Image 1: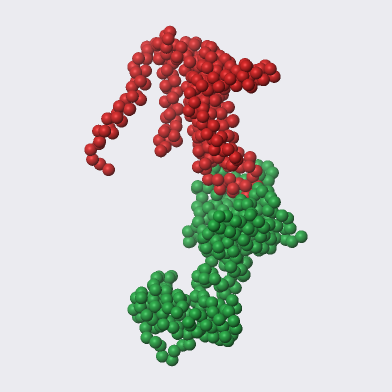
Image 2: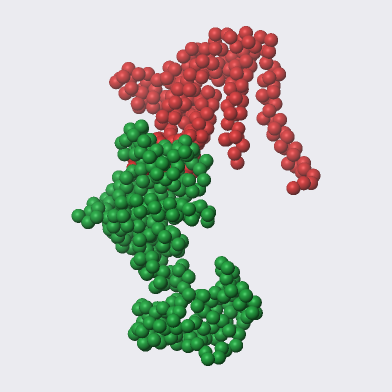
Length: 345
Length: 260
């Protein structure tokens, strides 16, 4: 018997196809990360039995899940907008699952009260969903999903509906609850930070297929698609390496890593320096770029560069003023070899 | 928007309003107010009123029992011929009630397709009985309920039902504990409309159940009959029906009358 989740999910629709392999060990949190329309939610709904599989199979703790209807599967699901039953109190929302599994009313309410206590909402038990704040509703939804003692917990964008401040707090609480949960967890998000904080392993989906997977640190350090690179805030290029030199299009970049053949090269936008005139004693990686756009980025300014390679450069507002940059202008850009990171493609 | 009101719209609008309101005003003007209470207390009036209220209420209960599941079937289960079934459900809405009564006689009458069997097997006769009144009223009123409930079901967010399914609820439990509470306002609105329609039923009732005081003579039938013998009594009975209708309308104002 194999523990945890093993699945091959194939959902074919007109103009859309999802085909991914998925595994999650008991106690492991796997995040499905991807842009809108990538098929993350479809994958989650297929695991829950809400969307039929076109092909493939799902086994959970060695048992075939795909043969069961949604209500027979040992799962708990937290929906993006929680879908708490508006006519029931928080307590009865959480007690709903245990009741469906045959518990008496009193028993179900005891289970529900204990879970509300665990998520810190014992005092909100009698509140109707519309009286709950976003963060409270999120925790009730989590308690409701956990109340059925699922072997597989499914979370669809669990933090997306929250404002920035609540999000921070709920994220760390959710992380604690997920650590306590002994079943497998699959989490869908488009927010890289949620994925990095909550998940043990990331699976990046684009256009219905897996494009990259690995631990959060590995994915953050070595993105393999433009989408992932943007998520983790790196400039990413594909090129051909010969020792410390990588040919990216017309440009020859020097890197600290020594490699041969097809590689990725990544460097952070903050590592890019900009000069109005060609700098003396020039650093190795220097190119002549055009400014495509300038925007605020946190406390800094992000400059979009065109030219032989497109890149983002993050500079301080003071530097922007000194350089007197305007869109369309030509400029010199450089990055130190030690700031780049090359890895096999 | 401001400016002069266009008389091409205002004149017909006022005429239309007058057309709708004047007959009702006439009823109030010609009502025998001094003897009203006396007349209301007459046994025939009370008898007809009680029969009307009882049969309309039972007919509504029957419609709820059969109509809500039918609406659920039409809104939630896809099966071949669903569009045809939906069209069939609305037929009693457009059918002249007298024709409905004739049709009921042909099927449930003593010689009817099912009526024959009912009488032979259970000794049950529907036409010209109080049960027949209920059948006629339910036949005419049920589409109102089905359409109202189906509309509510289609408007309800089905994802709540999905959430219930992931918590282990069977389709019946989902219906009873999630769907029904969510669409309760629609069911209530449908039931009230259905009840009002059953209360006013005339054509199918007189055709299928006849006009026997005490057993099948409901208020509308009594009004019609009284008009020939005792016009004042007809006015009193009409006033009672009018009062009931107004109460129903005002209770539904927010949900139905004012909705676009």
